[in-house]
Image 1 (cartoon, rainbow, N blue to C red):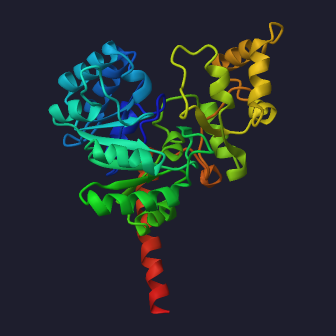
Image 2 (image 1 turned 90 degrees about the vertical axis):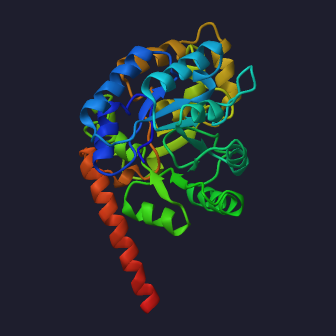
Length: 338
């Protein structure tokens, strides 16, 4: 599955992912701009195979924060009839009338995938009736649980596989976070997962939307040491963002830079800086974010970026990963013979 990354995951990336046999997602993000979402869905319809399922990903805390958001969500369901919707941060949301996002999606015959970062949230999603779980580990790029609250991809996926198998045997579990190649997919399958989610690896594709200069930095990153999960970027951005990220999801997996080096692990000092009338930290950061100055603003990416050596087509990436996964599984048979 291709992760519904707000920004990079448009209609073309989703279509090419489907063409390669994966589940491709169009990101609705905060669901503020229906016109833009409609345009990306139109691209998907034009470029994807005729039988490809339409899959749309939403950010829970912002897209369904009020009655207007619920109305927009229902309009998307009614107009586009997606086959699958995915929710995250949080995965389960309930409106004023007591109806959950899962129930509303099911009313329009859409399957629901919940991305969670803890066993507790996974159990809540299963009890809410979701059709699939994504176990997002702390190695993932982009937003996720704070590092003191999250778990590694493999331990979390392993636990959720057991939880689902015990009481919800028909609910697939996918692993997300730090999976860049077929070996990672094979590892997820060995734990009992039904598949894997590619985020950063597909961000570094030709069809992903976004700045080429940002993608180039993913290629240039040499190892997991170049990636950090931190609240620093969100704390600064929340000072001016119209949709601030709430706890415990205000944590980014991103490439290390001068901002994270200066402020990670210093939340008290950072918030004192915000109150300093003479400080230009927030304004400098906002300008850097607008201009693409990655020494200050973040480039989202997960651990394992050192395995990305080029910007390839989504079709090529997924095809190669499938072949690598099968080769890895076959090679493991030799251990049994030994």
